[in-house]
Picture (cartoon, rainbow, N blue to C red):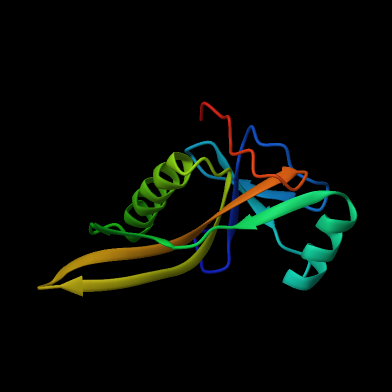
Length: 129
């Protein structure tokens, strides 16, 4: 489930109808099923009064480990912590890369903080998650 282009939203965050749940991550965030193109999504959100903020500066995390799935999940958890510190309730996975250094495998994950809310003035997340 952790792959480029994936969109995750904090479980307690309000979200529009077009954000269909596709699964959940053990940390309490949920994966969103993407059935619309980015342009269609923007049109749908603006027509219903939602704003989907795209924050500057990606979050990049690298985690070493032999189990790819657990290592990628650990990297995503670290990204989520940073995104929450920025008071955002969504993130979009930009890149997931598997590498190795001196025979030790590692995963690099790059995400873009996002925030979804009703209205246009950034209110930031008020989640305890």
